[in-house]
Amino acid sequence: MEQDKSLPSWYVYIVRASDQSLYTGITTDPERRLAEHQSGKAGAKYFRSRGALEIVYLEASADRSSASKREAQIKKLSRLEKLALIKR
Figure 1 (tube, rainbow, N blue to C red):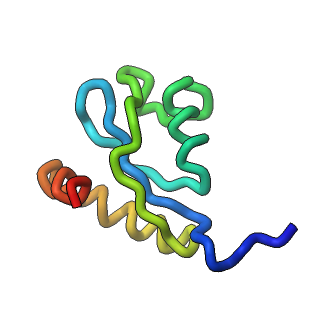
Figure 2 (cartoon, helix red, strand yellow):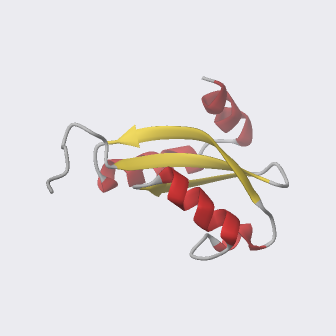
């Protein structure tokens, strides 16, 4: 089965952690990735000492390269800038 090229295949996401910190990452399946972060299996080491609560921001990207570039841009933002991005 061929993937529909009109649909985004990669996403940049921000997860709010139990300590209210924000974690940014990329994935092809946001729901699966959040479940991995929450279960501790295949999740980021970041969530070993804090729980992953919810995805608070999701942005579609055309491909892995553009998602990675956008992830890097978001990671450079201050916490206040990230919160403003989430509110939009």
